Length: 212
Image (cartoon, rainbow, N blue to C red; front, top):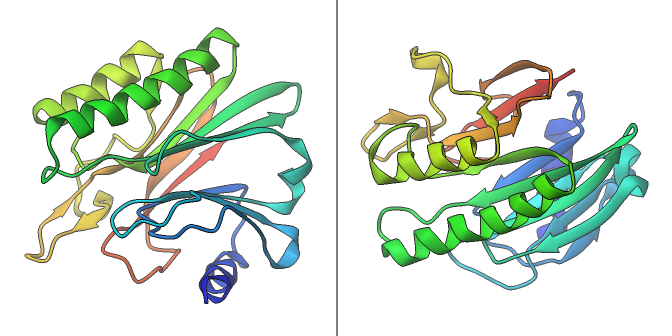
């Protein structure tokens, strides 16, 4: 049962301080779920065997959600009132290299649509997800760089070249950093890096970002 899986995730999170968790490649379609403790899960509402995204929101924030929008099985966002300002929090899952470039372009077009609206409205922006690329590597890395530059976003977990910073391990044991959190430059970023604190039985590691 899908509720049991998300209950396991809440158990993993119970010892951590968290506000929002973004998930890529969920492969589930549940719409909106109320979970134990009053937390809310927003997922894509169509079944998929290869994509799907989700946003898990801590119960202390659920009454501050102003908008939830699913653009596709790969892009979703919420507008969240935080203090006196609005945050647009976006989750994305980029098509991997096995997909045609038109699918990749469509993914970035969708991201630009929701970020341009947030930019015009003066929202603070946070974007997280599996971008299936490394920063500055090839056409995929260029698309990610251009997105960040267009909306004055910082790639929060771009620093560090050591072994501990990888987010994905291939079946051949090759480790790369392809999952990122991007944020408005105006945010006070305290810390961001790959972490193993949330064990989902995945070949990806969590990216944790802490803001002031």
